[in-house]
Image (cartoon, rainbow, N blue to C red; front, side, top):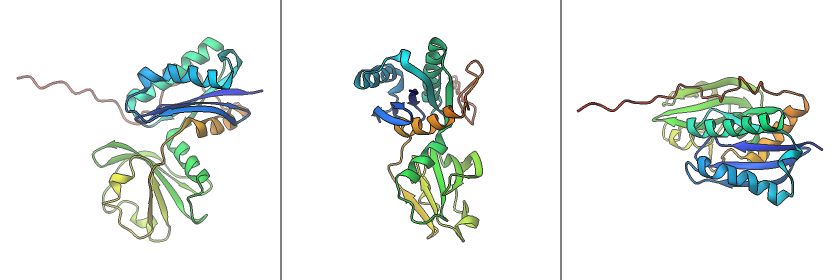
Length: 229
C-alpha cells in the first residue's frame, strides 16, 4: 500500500497528514504563526503515532512548494527532502495556489461551473501571489505576484463570476467591487488535501529531483540592512 506523508508550511501555520492510497488516515494542523520551526517535527511524529504507522513504511513525501512564506517554505521543503534522502523515497511537490483551488472546489462553495477561481496568498502591501483557474482547475493565467487596484480583473468580471479566496483575498475586497466578484473566507492550505493531490502525481511518477528541487518562492527574499546612525 502507498503511504504518503504530506507537509504544508506555506502560510502562517502548518499542517501534516498521512494518506494511504490517497485516503486520509490522520492529519494535524496549527494556525499559530511561525510554528513550523518548533512544531513540524512534533506534528510529523504525532500523525505516525495516531495512525500506528512508521516512517519506514512511507512510499513518498508530498510538500506544498509555494509560493508563500519564505521561512515556512524553506523549513517544509528541507524537512521533506531530508526524509526522502534518508528513506530513499520520491518527493512530490504541489503549487500552493493550486492546492487552495482544489480545496475550494472540494468545499462545494462554487455556484456555477462557468465561474473562475482566483486563490490569493498575501505578499505585502497590496501585492498578492495569485493564479487564475476555471472550475475544472485548468490554469488560465499562471502564478504571479500581482499588485491589486481598482482595475484588477475588471475585464474578466464583466462576463464571469470570480471567486477570490485565500489569506490574500480579504485585503483586496476594498478594491475589487464588481458585483460578479465573490469573496470566500477561511480557505487555508491544508495537508489533508495536499496528500490527495500528491498521491495522484505519485501514481503517475511525477516526482522531483530531490538534489535540485527548491521551493517556489516566486520573489527573491529581501534582507534589509539597518540604516546607520
